[in-house]
Image (cartoon, rainbow, N blue to C red; front, side, top):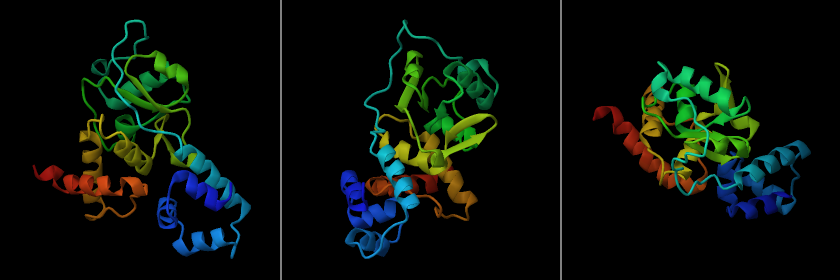
Length: 216
């Protein structure tokens, strides 16, 4: 795909495409008009990111309990979130990438809940054989994955985008608390956070809620 095709498949304007991938607007214009040509490695990286971004990361509904499915370890049986997540990973497989609330627990941005049931992940279709698992996708870019304490999870910006994509069914307490912590630990600034253009308005609303989170 050339740059114009990549952009149009996403449905972005040139300015939205530039904002999505942190590319100067003038550079995108020059690439599309042929005034300049992007390096092949840049094209390859962009194409990989765009193919993954085209995958629908929205989930229509939360899974209901199915007695025919396998069970994951119960959160209430473990003292800390990390020990529980390691036990969950043992059941789901080493390649699983934790997302949303579970990613925030891995990052240390959210303590989780003692009655946690839903587990958000990226991984193979087979993880859906377990009760409580919400599969956001089969693959996520390696550039969006962090690893700590033997656990793989989405980085903060990807976690934020996934939260906004699934806002209608996600309990937003975790991401609101995490964004609030980020804000106050970053000199009362959201610098460093980035979301796709289609989520910008939602993020601004979330940012306002995050500022007031610890004032309640």
